Length: 313
Ligand SMILES: O=C(O)CCC(=O)C(=O)O
Ligand SMILES: [Fe+2]
Image (cartoon, rainbow, N blue to C red; front, side, top):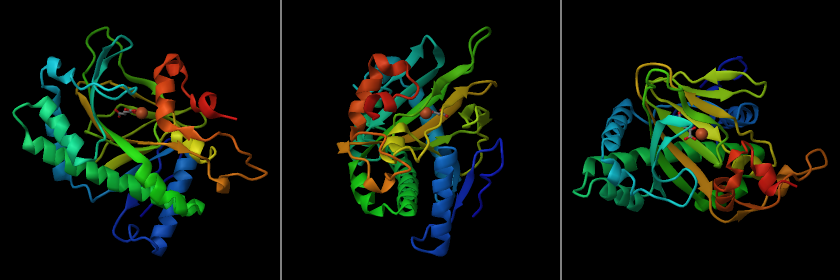
């Protein structure tokens, strides 16, 4: 296990292995502290998680290429009322990005429904691989949640949060820019989620802004996943967890593919009293993550950090 979080111009890197994945072990406890610190200082970190083998990772990304080859008319049937869910492409300010999403990702039923929508004659390999892969991302997300909550001494909320969570499994493709075309893959934004785990192919482009305004690029490598906090987690933790601004710039000649498991919460969440004291007065009212998404999908979409406007005190 190691952490490079004090190094400037790099994202914190946290290794997860058999030893520190054993709840209650001293190594679990020390890793929990490092995870919490990373989410407070950067709002994200690189998780080196070897339980996700390079075989399934590669298989999933190859299938994801196949997914984007499905005819547009079918991809467009992947609709959703939520901001950023469903199918999206051909945005005037972000011409390179195309995405598809499984609402209620990391469930077999939704993965099957999505597969059957994309391939009316079926595609068992896609369905099985996407489901297994989403479960592995979910496992990592849950480990991180549990570690952070334990380290804050608020583990009593873990089961409730785990059961209130629902996930968007999002597949993204960024094509390379043509001559004189902008290289913006994804505009700078802060996720409206609680917590996400994002995997990418070997192509660079994802960048995070540090608290002092510098942009740091993510260098993809085998078994490296990004854990990113969203504004929901910031509100719930009374601003202890930081949600970082990030963007995608497509520079090279290769297409970038991303697969992310983005978590959101159902229901109204109050801010635990453990996060509030004289030095840290309550900053947010109880909030509904789904209502927050709706709020951001309306005319407030421009605001990069909308949570304060939505439920700040
Ligand atoms: O494609 C990526 O690397 C990042 C995607 C992302 O930030 C998002 O979908 O919110
Ligand atoms: Fe994002």
